Image 1 (cartoon, rainbow, N blue to C red):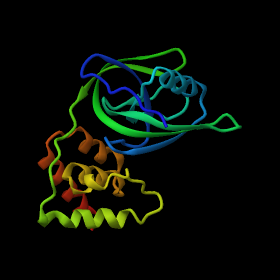
Image 2: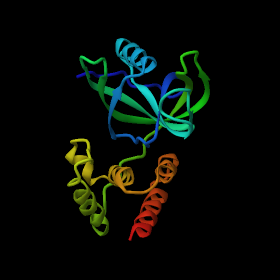
Image 3: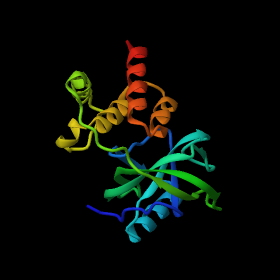
Image 4: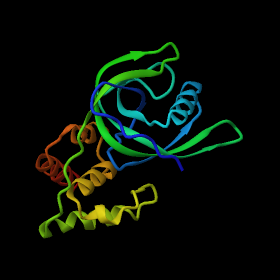
Length: 201
């Protein structure tokens, strides 16, 4: 297991890992690293006791030339890693805090380095009785083999946690999930979630 330093609020420099999925605070993220630029980046971040930034890809791909990421992403902490004999590195990360990219540079190896400012996570808000249906829906989703949720039972009573987990695993497109990630008002997030649930019915 590996614990990393918590980021400060402004003017942090982070390597950015562009992905085809949205990562929220408290998301569990498992990655198979095989590109040399990312193997080097992960090794460097581990040696510095630091995590890295994850952003949804706006244009481009996860491999090859540096993709264009959305400006708002999530800082993740590396909590476990395993180097396989074939050279592939398996890492487990936990989403910790949102950030906004102020400026970025594409390095010669096509790794993205960004100056970022961190955004406070949403305040914890307990779920009201009329919204217990959301907990029931989340419990149903956990039966799916591809759904992995942080083992934190006390957080299941918090609206911010439940809204983010449902958004993360609902079968809607990633741009809709990105819109929720970018929204800092919990009531607006709840309205966005109910709208997505209505679309899925």
